Length: 260
Ligand code: BTN
Image: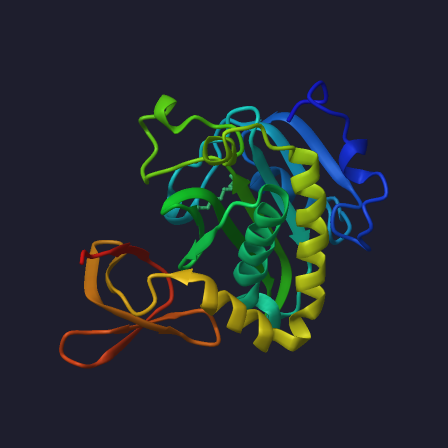
C-alpha cells in the first residue's frame, strides 16, 4: 500500500475508533511489520498503534514459515497492552474481525481454520500471528500481525505452501483496502472491548471453525496425530479424539483434513 495508491487519510479520516488505528505508522517497504511494531513499543507508542507495510521482504507466519506480502495486499501489526487473562482470546478477536470485515466489504463467505487461518472456498486468504512479551508475570505487550491477500495472484507464487487465494481472485474485481481496513479497525476494537464478555466470542469462533467433527491430521513439529477434531476448549486449544478413545489437547499445530 504505497501512498500513491491512496492517502492514509482514506483510512484515518472519521475512522470512529477510540484507539485502534488512531496512530498509523506506514512504511512502503519493511522486512516485517512485527519487527517494526516491536521497535515502536520500545519507543513507548500508544495502544492501538498500527504498523502497516506497503510490502514485506521477510514477512513471517506461524511455525517460522515465511509470509508473502507483495504490493497491493495487507500486512499490518496492531500494538496492544492487554491483561494476561485476554491472551487466549486475541487470536479469536483478530480472526473474527478479519472475517467480519471481509464479509461486510466483499460479501464473500469465509471460514476460520484452527487456529489462525482465514479461508475462502477452502483456500487461505489471511493469517494471524500473535506475539506476546512478558515482563515477569505481566504482559509487557502483544503484537497482533494480520496478513490478507487482497490482489495477490497465487499462480505467480509457486513457493506458497498452502492452497491460497486472494479477495480479488475470489471476487473477480478489485477490493478497496482503505474500506477493508476501516472496517477491520472498528470491528477489532469492538471485539477487543467486549472481551470481558469472552463467552460470546468463543462461541462465535467455534461456530465458524472449519473441520470440527471431521477426521483430521495434526502436525506438531515432527509429531503427527490423527483423530476427530472434537471441540475447542475455552482457551482456544483443539480437543482431538484419538482412535483409542482418549482425548488430546492441542495448543499449537497444523491441521489438515483427512478425506473422507
Ligand atoms: C500465518 O498464517 O502463519 C500467520 C501469517 C501472519 C502474517 C502477518 S503479515 C503482517 C505481520 N507481519 C509479519 O511478518 N507477519 C504478520
